[in-house]
Image (cartoon, rainbow, N blue to C red; front, side, top):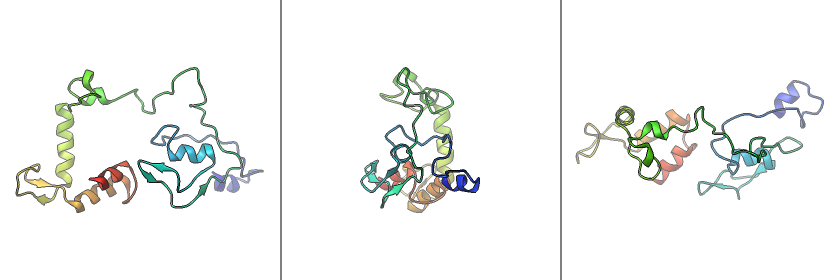
Length: 162
């Protein structure tokens, strides 16, 4: 936004009139929101057990931004999805969606198709899908396809723990 404000020849590029919209993949405690609202994050800021930055990163705006959604206290924050929730569409019994979820048949079919697309390692133990499992190379290919590079995204952090 700072570069754009300079390009547009804003009178004060560090204080442009601007609205930042987006899904920051987290609530008010996530790194992206803290960067904008607090004016920066550093190596001490931890998300999912890991520092999100190796060095101090400061927002170039002269004033931190305001999280307009969380500043309204008269109602709960709206969902960040087009619909309030999707889990009930993905499980067999929506009443147990969070306590003991069991994927519905359609989700199983779709996940199996995705898995088959990536699994290349022949599994002699018979535990894989159609005789194949995903090895490290397969997982890395999947991560690059969904995150565009290695090392980013919650999928990467979860796969790295496995």
